Length: 219
Image (cartoon, rainbow, N blue to C red; front, side, top):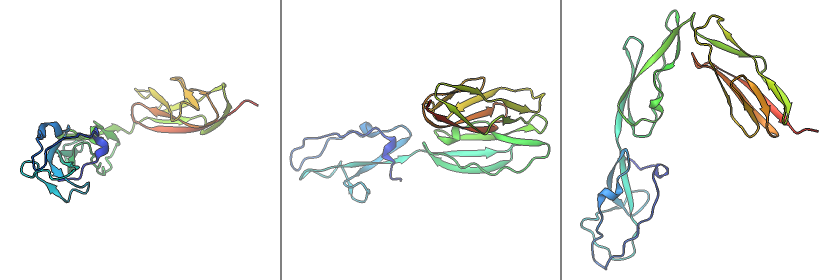
């Protein structure tokens, strides 16, 4: 049994008016949460004082705290040839730990075939993904830092290696759109004073490079 992280639940207070020395009529179905089973009630948040709502009567004002047990699932990481790299039992809504992947001659590891292990809701098998060294895309940016004024723009030029890569698609991001925005062509525009990090990602491999953009007000 686990002490639930109540931040994951919808919090609500339910009030019962009960005659002295009477039972509280509680429907356990009202205390079910996705991915969790209701265990029992306690009179403290540390879940040390068990309270049996089926047999114990109310003699004074009382606050009850439901305890839950998360469903558990198996997460198995396998290599390209089916070799099991790790097995782990993970509670609902938690993340699995990724295993180390051994070097593979002529290939580059680029990640896993799914990222659903970051929030586990079912039993799953996750497989390592590779590309050949010849296919592996890297990306470089024309600038690692850049200063510009609010309302002005500049273009970040991304260079992909190798030049004959099949997938040259790039994804552009900024960590703070209130400071700077970037479009699909790498054009960065200052929005307000501050610092933002603009990132370009090679779609084929997930390789990322950043540029720190400092935006200042117009004099």
